[in-house]
Image (cartoon, rainbow over all chains, first blue to last red; front, side, top):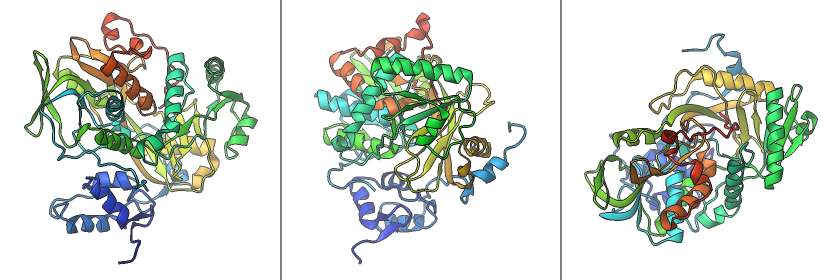
Length: 94
Length: 401
């Protein structure tokens, strides 16, 4: 295996860093995101989520039949503030 | 992302709980963990922290990471001067990169009322030794050239205010607390609290029990639920606050900027993202339960305010939005100390959306109270019994969001 393998290319999280977090006792998708920063870049986890979960399954840390991705945050794709500002409704939504 | 050298094992669902501790802390957020860390430094008390989910799952992992000494009340200014001073050496102390950056806070006043607040604050800050200075709109442009300052009447800038990335803060306190003998147990909720002759017994969601001489309720906006189950009525309530983060940009924005007129705040984190939130109009009656929903209305409202005050952000892309709960106290002051009617249960809640920045100083003063009986001056006004005594006074008008 090459010396440095990247799990998350947006935030430069390497396999070594992921394994380091696991050695500290972390094993869940949500907490590994928050310890390594994985999945918080422009792709919002679209590239790295499956790599992360495969790794956790391979290491026997999660059950492949029940493991969930981390909470998906809106918007689905990056949207400019200009476009969002133009969409302000005239009346506040209830 | 994190330093590798001195990082310590974190809390875990497998951490073994003793049958009895001196102090049980409910809530593995920054308040509970900062207090646990300081207790482990100044005392030999046996301490356990209980977190019902994973660490960083609550408000400590959801806030904007701003730290400022620009408050309107003397006590808060002094407390935050202490907290920011502590942050200078904290990355080294905790062995983790906190992404702490002192780019200052720039407040913009566009109304006469805002102008007089900033003028009053600057006098107070000067008296207390905080380096806040008042600026014209043109002078504010020298700090942030991209602003539209056409209707800015006055600005205030304090170069020592700053931003952090909140997540490693929590991991850092947890790791150091664990390495100093504190038990940090995650994924374990407190279902019920029973009074004993010599303490309190916590009945846990795992079926275990934990007895403690004293218990600290450090669950923030979730504290209401726990208090109510014990017959403790305190007037704090949860308030949903939304926030967003943008694509990362090269560093260009030094300070966190606050527009007093709209309650808009935005900063650039050391990771490059623009992080922004705003006061939402027409929010309805106070909530009784924590609500973590996100809305399109928030992004639209924020987009309009941010693109008005900094037009080039119209091209800026939002990557994600989320929400976190403010734990709102009716007078804006925190609720810290022994509970009315149940003195073995201490409260550390009601920080009204600004607990994260105060936590370094609060953890230290609370540890001194619990371990040595030392009473920091703020504890008088933070007394949980003040509401029933009729001693509640609003002193602070610089609560943002």
